[in-house]
Image (cartoon, rainbow, N blue to C red; front, side):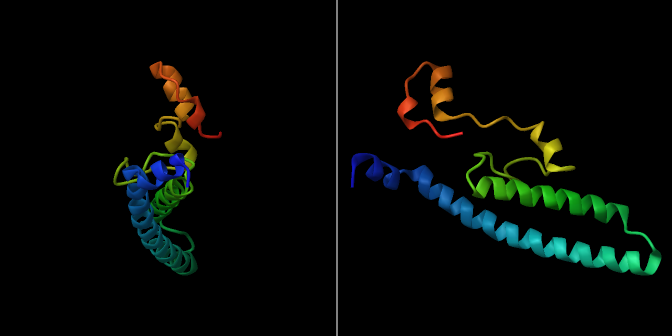
Length: 124
């Protein structure tokens, strides 16, 4: 093993990220179950009354945006953690992006701070 690998294996942030991955994986499954319940109730209301419930439509949208935020975090596309570490999403994911700061690579952050960490730059 080279020195960089050992450093990454010993990094506390790496193992803390694993804890968050597990917790948000559980939150994802709970949100998925709630979404199925919303779908079932909406279908029944549409079946019997002819139209869905507006409040449940909004809840479904915010749950879908929350699931999206979890997926973006779990796949390392974004370092910002979703609710409860951020505000509960309202509306589609694009609307929530406007209130979030864009992800910066380590090289960009180093350039902004005046240090040189270009060898650790993240792709993309």
